[in-house]
Length: 344
Image (cartoon, rainbow, N blue to C red):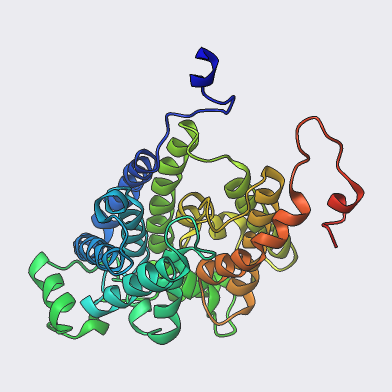
């Protein structure tokens, strides 16, 4: 009878969702610090506002669904979504833009599908993509590096969308914008006409290195495996390097692609989402490769200079199919013929 009280022979882990989310939040701090250093107080304002919205909307929807509020509110998932949105949005984001992004992320992309663990799409990327499609001008208002705003000026724009000199006096093209829209010039000619390009690349490099440091920290504690992020970076670098070798005056190098935009941020904080991505190790490699190829195609030939939201959402659609064809065999069994053919 004593044997009846023994636990079943399952693998037990001390990790919890709240603990994992806490590590993810800590890993974003280097990137947050670097962005705040170069771009001012806007990112911090976005972060506080997005966090309050995410927690409030999460509690509201949980109440409407008659689910226990505190259990799900303290798991950290809503806060992680808020952080990802706030870090991805431009520092010059008015209050309503962040509200729309968080609303679509928490209510529509997460709870409409049943809450945490049931969402087929990455919630933060859904909110970001909605804003990028609906409000493209507001989503490109990144501050010029040589310009800095006081907290009062930044708050004035955040709340009233009004600032001395107008917003155009404080914003400028990002490195990806300059490399994407060359207007028939070579990259060297663009750099000569835009001396800030070198500085912008330097800033983008530091931001990406900061998120790379946070991602390596998450890898060190086994928060996720290396398969998806490394596969994404490798495929993006390979495509960029191949085109750059053919036409170096027209196509940016692999290092420029890897160290600009949201590359490292997406590789270690978005692509690694365990819910909306592939599950098997082989599947994660396929998923990461697909994201990297799509990012390069959209960056190079599409209308958007950075394309991680669209690339990740498209691969989210493909994740179930990837899992079907990459699922490992059960322990102690040989793969059946129907299993190897995807049960088709």
